[in-house]
Image (cartoon, rainbow, N blue to C red; front, side, top):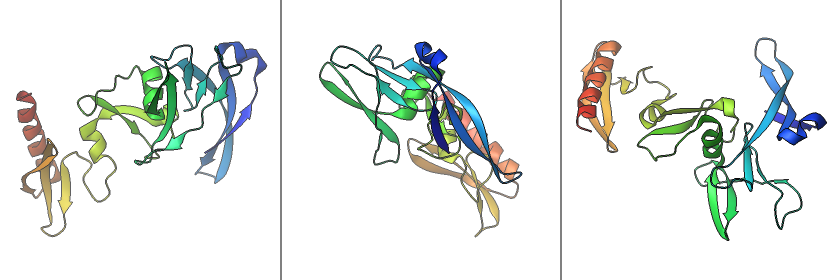
Length: 201
């Protein structure tokens, strides 16, 4: 996707900006030019210093020692996510942009893998538009979009045995639950194991 900046003078005071977004239409193989309003919100803990937008841009605000606003240049970390460096009280902090977007616009509370985590709907780690981000469980995220497996979490097709395999991952360990002729039976076995696990928490 390509974004082209277009100035809207009437919205500057509200930290809003219109951008042209070219989206591919698979039905007729044409590019559709649509307008998306870019909205900026303060970054928690850096109010008055930095803001993040619903399009995944991060900017440094005008303040003492800085005459103009400027967009921060992101870098890609070792896991393939876009990050920016924020500075406060002479302390630098590197943060993932998709986390900033969800904290600002979805009231996300990062809590490692214990709570909900941020997922890129289209699996493109560089696409941090709000519409491409969703909050899911770590269990859902780890099983999402795996090719050659079931539509159910904890179920996969075993070609060597011509059966559906049920398994559950607990504390990073995979526990085999059995092989089944029917996909739904394997799914039910996973659900049973999951309920039993949740009772122990």
